[in-house]
Image 1 (cartoon, rainbow, N blue to C red):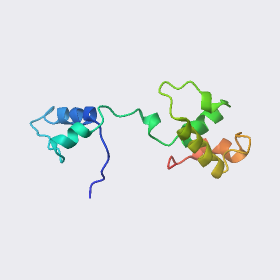
Image 2: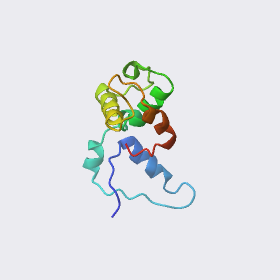
Image 3: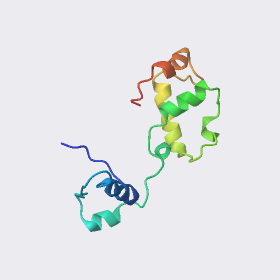
Image 4: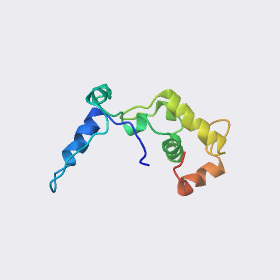
Length: 115
């Protein structure tokens, strides 16, 4: 079974444009036209839809103490940032003061990006 993932209209159009680019091809969409028009116009930036535990850990390792006020190009929600901090705290990478622990200092090297 193929995994299902939500797409935007822009992403669907881009994929359709790839069909037949290098050789003859067709694009078959497995949803109705009404469903297509119900899709969001664009996909939100990755940083606004992914777990922020890894970026938060990297910022902390680089010496950025106040990650909630970091000047992101496409700022994530505060809830996403707090969730990333909670994950790092639960893994023992941050202490009660949101500072890196010894575990947190080595984790960027061995992080498996599953969080």
